[in-house]
Length: 80
Length: 189
Image 1 (tube, rainbow over the protein chains, first blue to last red):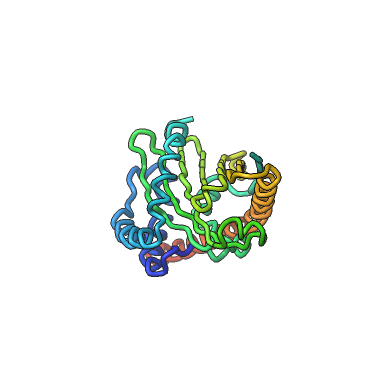
Image 2: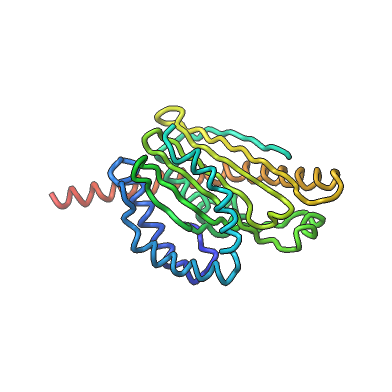
């Protein structure tokens, strides 16, 4: 798996990524996974990452980009 | 504005490609070394459609030509924001991304779609729109766009080679896992 931009988050990220990939390939793609089972691990990773993004000032850049991406949701969150 | 487009065919099923895509930039990929980190920012399955929506932050490090680097303020680390959508029913992966760094002078918007061509073949279609926003001479803007498109094309070529390795390794690891599991089950019987 790829690294995190914050080395201190690598361990929690690795655990989450492995969980997600297993869920994705074994359940989600087979129509058995409607909810993400790795949410507890994601919470740990997210907690670590959020601090790292703040320290680097990336959180502000992300807010703007999210706004711009809203129109993509309209096009891609539906079937077709 | 300049447009870069590219399409490739991978000799793997859509399921294999869409799974391996999550680890496209793992150490198995020795070609796309400009990507130094991939972080997941949010992820959820839409209750209504079953579509998996993911936001990721991709961190790159690569040297730009000197004249371009000075225009960009001298940093060689950049960030890209990506939103992806997986529809397992219609078998479609769509990824849209844009640059976060240098966004005041350059806008790169990329869209990638993975769809099955057959049970064993998957098509990858990529389109990137590059627009220089910096004020000044058209000549400078053109040069900035040219250089960026040029890098896109180089990264696309290397990306294909690198992803082929990831696909091959994923298939090998998966079949080994399966073999081990079968062996365990045989022993248990």
